Image (tube, rainbow, N blue to C red; front, side, top):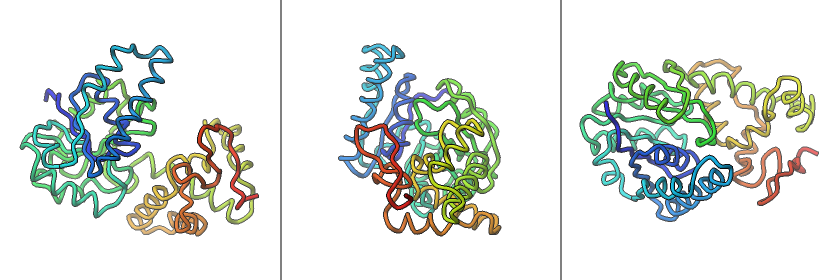
Length: 297
């Protein structure tokens, strides 16, 4: 399958990153979001990230201009997918929202179009079941930040065809990514392993075993992790971590996946990590210094 036209649904952090990478590699990209303001913000973010690549000598100014020229924005989902050969959904990690989006995509996208979700935990089989083409539905889980991270976790649903799986595997390589194909069980591989570790780190803090800096330092220096699990949770978004843990807990029925009460309380209080300005650390615009939240001092 020779794919050229890509539609990306959702202009948040993941959506703009996915659009950036496809556009940079010469694909025609339609970025879709119900908010015109969010679309403008996404294009501005892509521009800034391209400037960083130019500054590092990874791109030329001409390539930056070509990349931005490959991106069109629309607020109508039906209009945005009508010429797509691949749709990548990158909306909020919410089951009902994703199912509603895939019902709409299934009705509006061309018959031969592959429907992919960037979900980090929600069942691809469940998503595919609401469409008119379950064999064409697949998981294409990019990592954040998308322009930098090499991995694409490809998730085959129960009905995903081998042709679709092979196509997305090869397409990921064309994006200069490294694809890893897994099967559709809660959390797949990345988050089935990562989220219990993050949850255990939060439980260790909750139980007073160690402080924020100590927990992160042990994992960075002792286990060679590039950032500690609490900082990583802030970076991912504590609300996203909570959603994934709930999917794992419900999917496996095992209490080991139950979200730590501290995580639940922080999300309820609006302390979502870097995107809200505070989680386990406090985030100040323009500052790279890590400052532990006063709640944990």
